[in-house]
Length: 379
Image (cartoon, rainbow, N blue to C red; front, side, top):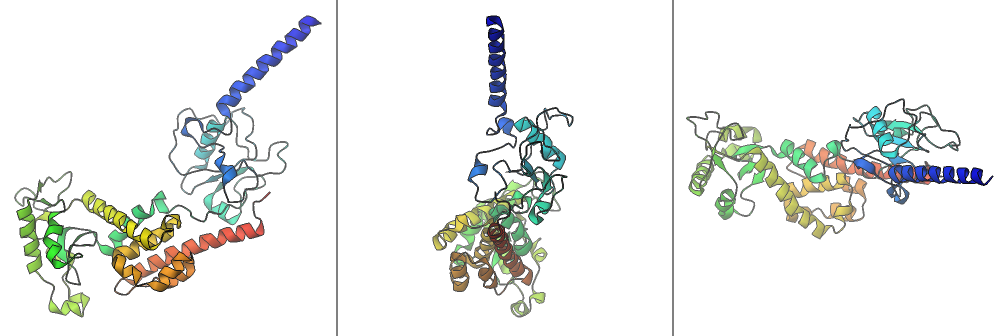
């Protein structure tokens, strides 16, 4: 009898050791190997979930080493619902989650699941409350600040958009308002015409050699020499002499195009420098925005992108003139802000771009309010 007790005791200790070892390695509260896993942060989110184990899959790239086979005999993941971002492989997301949590994502509720959600959804079906799995379906999950396309920050997203609305020129030219401009709408006379020369000299201009570089392209493939201050001064003077026609003031179709100035000077800015300059400029504008709107950093990314576009176009002083817009933004009334964001002197498409960003932020907010008021996804 005593030996049997010892045997059962040893077996119990062995089993306890194995379980403790497995739990230490595969605890659902740990994120092993940088893969997505159950996280305590889920418990702290304000967005309602059907149970504490719902976990939204992120959008980062994952390691594909050591993925589990689909025929794994691992235990079922308890009450798990994977929200797979658009463009990401659902199969890959499942395997990554299984590897991180040492459990198997099931198509249906496991025994004793209590009718809770299991299965897999894409962002689109999650937003509509639908399910791509054969289980009970995932809870509708709202996000008051969904990622911008490409998971870009507001600054990165706006930099790309500015290329569309401001243009992107490696050489200096005279814009339709008569100012010397270069890069992504960088007005070199923004600080006064007397500052134009110093503004130009502060930029990392290169100069091409037409004998060896007829296209006058300066990049990693086409080598160019760093321009001297005198070369920049001479190039600027040449551009300033080629003023816009008088008719340009009343009819933009009579204005010289950017390409008209391509051969006026051999000075060029590299693409990386042009983009960096815009990011730096937006960084400076960020300080102006925070001064005027102390809660700016808490605004949805779409609101931030819209405001970056407005201040880049209007300047800090110009933005302050939009008092109704500012009042709406401070009240976080994105719908009214959208209506008050219209500017003069810009393309209709650019005004629509800003208005749509603000309306998207408003609609995202309304979806979450509706979700909470209806109790969707709550216990």
